[in-house]
Length: 624
Image (cartoon, rainbow, N blue to C red; front, side):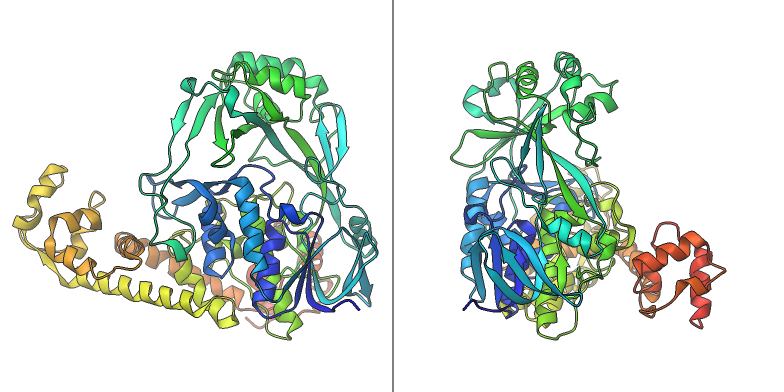
């Protein structure tokens, strides 16, 4: 007899892997079903984790007890902190990874989890009874029963690959698509649609003249994603390289646009506006003679390169001809061409904040099937879906994050409240409170929450509490300690900063934009002695204290704004409310409120088309 599970996760991409790990670590018996056990958390597109806003999400996943940061650190071949020239709200970690090792390491981590089982097969149907999910059926005829099911099918639902006029059924190159589930969901009442994404050709590094390219090295003092690794160092790194297109490249592409499925009507689904194909860039930015490209190594022990910025669905011969007109790529060989892929997704406004569907109880969606794009966005959704599927199977209270608590909260709220009209990608600009939601303080914001539900370990909590206490002690030291002109004026003069005329509190000196704690440590021996006590997480403690002191006014103001808006989030809307009775609200607003069924007044206010006057009507009706 087959085992009955608490949670079944369908798909072992980035969403499925995080979902399965979270559910099993919370004590729920979990089954992860995937079509290929050798491609767990496969990096289908670029071999990198993090970047603008995405790096913050990975730090949050790690703070909550997820695995993306841990696996990234174990497979990193280059680390860079982006946007260092801007304020700390914009700092975003990014790591190039060994693509093959990344998938292997994920499998190693998952196989260590006691409550997690695996099965290799294709899920072709789900079992529904009275609008409640009861399990899944696989292609080989296996029926697995469960209390909850999480669908994380990525780009595999009716996936169709385009290379010029060639079309291939598949969820990724050389991997079959998955059929049947979309039709099942449609018949159950779900709204579905089609989206498109793409990937560039993979190049043979042995055929590239790197002397004509600009080398891009990693940071001199590289960091890590996981808070577990903050005391470690990355011993070696591989460089990326920068290339540029030119008018000859653009002319070659334009001449063959008639064969592009993007322009000849073959592809009609929605593509990602913020990650356009090279064809789109040539048309949209017709006034530009050049576009920047990044050649990213796919591992330590391979010559395969990913050419970031050159996604294409043109015929392979056109791609190769255009690539060979780029300086340094005159003799380039390709391992495989770029391609576009169309796939099914489900309208995410059909989900609750827990990522459980509104139509079918105990069924959860996570990842690209919710209309998102990116490993990080998928992993975050998988984590939240996995947590809530496990908690629901154990009859425990749901776990959610608000917009002022995490980028993950912003991501999910945007999806379920606003829906998507293109593949959703996270940006720092989507978060109203990005000074509060920095990459450096994700552990302080979230680890205690994860510990309280049983996901984060005591060791993680102890590290966070130590870090928080040490930051407070360092800030107190700056508030209480004075520095004399003789101790610092020589340094201040050397950096063209105004010298002191009298003793000065350190807290006032650190407020200068050109002064850092590390610079003061080198000039003021008492501060060095004080900081030397922080042997564990020393850099994190110094960074956290410095940001808190330099940006204190901004942090206080943003928290005050957040607290005012949070009041609306605490005003719950009755589940069975009939919006048609509110005749003073516009017909469009009533229809949107009825379709999305917001849980709080705050969520209702963020629905596109809902006006402040509509919200006032609701507030008055609730006696507010």
